[in-house]
Image 1 (cartoon, protein in one colour):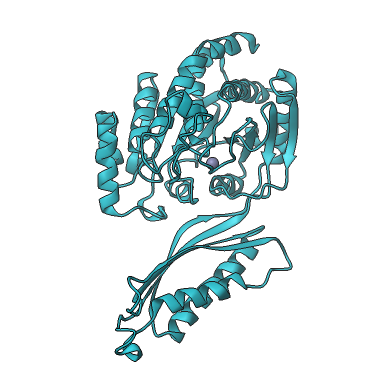
Image 2 (cartoon, protein in one colour):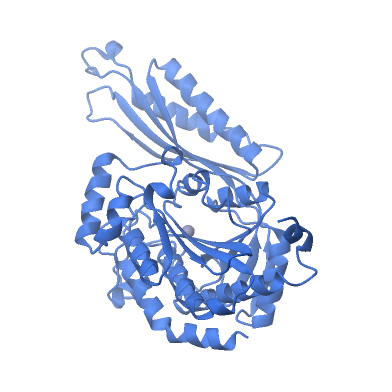
Length: 449
Ligand SMILES: [Zn+2]
């Protein structure tokens, strides 16, 4: 059953690798993915998909951690100069860089969704000869920005699945619609919520997502559990400047506020109900030696094994910031710039993928569930919405022998693993189409429809 489609996917391997290398060359950070998103829209439009983008797929008020207007404008122009598609880029302007592509297959049936994140990270890419993208000349052209988490591969996998799907679409009898969701701003967990709030997954019966890397090539985790709930907080203290020698009593020292808040934040007690994390990652303050610093900026993040213990740490952080402002007579602005919740993959779906992966034999090491994932991922908003609607959703890990670790300047994936991922997704499409007819799978749920 899978031979023909797997052969076709082998034939498009070079094309997929070229697409990935092109995205890798032009990495774009959260909410600035104008080039990437416009080219994805063009490619899927050319393939015959129905395209929705910009404000049609992103809820304006639910976006978190937006760049400034000036940065967005400059990035928009940069994207135009780097070959963004003019037909689609206008709809993305102002940080609405999401794309949804749909293909109707039948009048009746289930709706499947696949989500791919597309953003890069503010990290300088390695220019060492041992770094494969540098050696092969597809290293980042955008100074200080790099695809060092593999989302260039995720976007390319999405395009590869879409291409391959066209080859089998007439064989599918029980799937009504397949939806491809290209999500901006996963880094800093800022983007998924805005797509969920827009309702773009509310017509789906099954939703799948995956991450490349993290474990060795040939390994597959079918269902991830245990994502940490997380909140990203920016805090700004505003005080009063004064001469530190002449009239120090007239100053209001924002730097002292930030330093004291930082020490207190790092000493928030652990919680008995679960693992927590806390970090003050950045403090910026002061201008010169003899002036009382009037501004201080802090970047803070909290994480927790459950939403409850993360909220415990977050509330304590906010208390400390407010009390410190009071203590030093400072004004305070607190911005929640990113948030992910804790949610788990559906275990029925993990079992189906586990059996399927063993059947197709692409992976030597198939792991049904990993319950100890210690990162954060805003796909959890989508998992949670699907669970609320009694629908099924899953997050998989597709192993790849990465170099240098995620978010590292020497990060690189093993490109053949993208091809494995595309094959797995095509097998999933077949399986979902077939499973819907079998008596032991969700029959009650289907009859209720
Ligand atoms: Zn990532």
